[in-house]
Image (cartoon, rainbow, N blue to C red; front, side, top):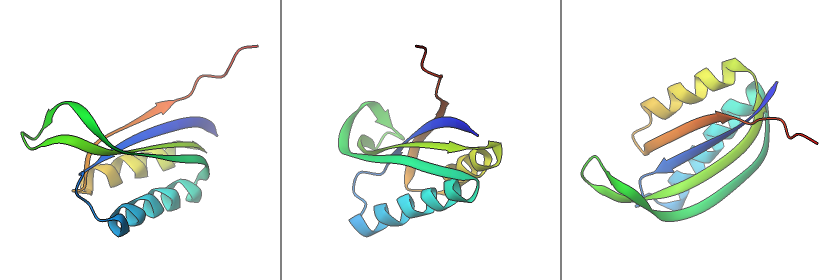
Length: 98
Protein backbone atom coordinates (compact mmCIF):
# COMPACT_ATOMS: atom_id res chain seq x y z
CA UNK A 1 0.00 0.00 0.00
CA UNK A 2 1.11 3.51 -0.76
CA UNK A 3 0.41 6.86 0.85
CA UNK A 4 -2.02 9.16 -0.97
CA UNK A 5 -3.99 12.30 -0.39
CA UNK A 6 -7.19 13.34 -2.06
CA UNK A 7 -8.72 16.78 -2.25
CA UNK A 8 -12.43 16.97 -2.95
CA UNK A 9 -14.35 20.17 -3.67
CA UNK A 10 -18.09 19.94 -3.12
CA UNK A 11 -20.96 22.22 -4.05
CA UNK A 12 -20.90 24.98 -1.38
CA UNK A 13 -24.62 24.95 -0.51
CA UNK A 14 -24.88 21.31 0.57
CA UNK A 15 -26.50 20.55 3.93
CA UNK A 16 -24.21 19.16 6.64
CA UNK A 17 -25.94 15.76 6.49
CA UNK A 18 -25.14 15.43 2.79
CA UNK A 19 -21.49 16.37 3.37
CA UNK A 20 -21.29 13.76 6.15
CA UNK A 21 -22.77 11.10 3.80
CA UNK A 22 -20.19 11.88 1.12
CA UNK A 23 -17.31 11.73 3.62
CA UNK A 24 -18.62 8.43 5.02
CA UNK A 25 -18.85 6.95 1.52
CA UNK A 26 -15.28 8.03 0.72
CA UNK A 27 -14.07 6.53 4.02
CA UNK A 28 -15.88 3.26 3.23
CA UNK A 29 -14.29 3.03 -0.22
CA UNK A 30 -10.82 3.64 1.21
CA UNK A 31 -11.26 1.27 4.17
CA UNK A 32 -12.23 -1.62 1.84
CA UNK A 33 -8.73 -1.55 0.34
CA UNK A 34 -6.65 0.48 2.79
CA UNK A 35 -6.97 2.83 5.73
CA UNK A 36 -7.73 6.50 6.35
CA UNK A 37 -4.99 8.44 8.16
CA UNK A 38 -6.70 11.82 8.55
CA UNK A 39 -9.61 13.91 7.31
CA UNK A 40 -9.53 17.71 7.30
CA UNK A 41 -12.66 19.66 6.46
CA UNK A 42 -11.44 23.05 5.29
CA UNK A 43 -14.94 24.39 4.80
CA UNK A 44 -16.08 26.87 2.17
CA UNK A 45 -13.29 28.65 0.27
CA UNK A 46 -13.15 30.79 -2.82
CA UNK A 47 -12.23 29.09 -6.08
CA UNK A 48 -9.61 30.56 -8.40
CA UNK A 49 -12.19 30.68 -11.21
CA UNK A 50 -15.87 29.86 -11.68
CA UNK A 51 -16.69 26.22 -12.30
CA UNK A 52 -19.61 25.41 -14.63
CA UNK A 53 -20.20 29.19 -14.79
CA UNK A 54 -22.02 28.92 -11.46
CA UNK A 55 -19.73 28.10 -8.54
CA UNK A 56 -17.25 30.67 -7.28
CA UNK A 57 -16.90 28.86 -3.93
CA UNK A 58 -16.54 25.25 -2.89
CA UNK A 59 -16.51 23.10 0.26
CA UNK A 60 -13.00 21.63 0.55
CA UNK A 61 -12.12 18.27 2.11
CA UNK A 62 -8.57 16.86 2.37
CA UNK A 63 -8.09 13.16 3.15
CA UNK A 64 -4.74 11.41 3.74
CA UNK A 65 -4.83 7.64 3.37
CA UNK A 66 -2.98 4.42 2.52
CA UNK A 67 -4.47 2.19 -0.16
CA UNK A 68 -3.92 0.04 -3.22
CA UNK A 69 -4.89 0.75 -6.83
CA UNK A 70 -8.38 -0.73 -6.49
CA UNK A 71 -9.34 1.95 -3.98
CA UNK A 72 -8.08 4.67 -6.32
CA UNK A 73 -10.18 3.37 -9.19
CA UNK A 74 -13.28 3.18 -7.01
CA UNK A 75 -12.68 6.69 -5.62
CA UNK A 76 -12.29 8.20 -9.08
CA UNK A 77 -15.47 6.46 -10.22
CA UNK A 78 -17.38 7.72 -7.18
CA UNK A 79 -16.16 11.29 -7.78
CA UNK A 80 -17.29 11.15 -11.42
CA UNK A 81 -20.82 9.89 -10.68
CA UNK A 82 -21.52 12.16 -7.70
CA UNK A 83 -23.15 15.40 -8.80
CA UNK A 84 -22.15 17.20 -5.59
CA UNK A 85 -18.42 16.80 -6.38
CA UNK A 86 -17.30 19.69 -8.59
CA UNK A 87 -13.54 18.96 -8.48
CA UNK A 88 -11.30 16.19 -7.12
CA UNK A 89 -7.72 15.03 -7.27
CA UNK A 90 -5.76 12.07 -5.90
CA UNK A 91 -2.01 12.52 -5.39
CA UNK A 92 0.62 9.96 -4.40
CA UNK A 93 2.67 11.16 -1.43
CA UNK A 94 6.42 11.02 -1.79
CA UNK A 95 8.41 9.36 0.96
CA UNK A 96 10.11 11.84 3.23
CA UNK A 97 13.87 11.81 3.02
CA UNK A 98 15.94 11.91 6.16
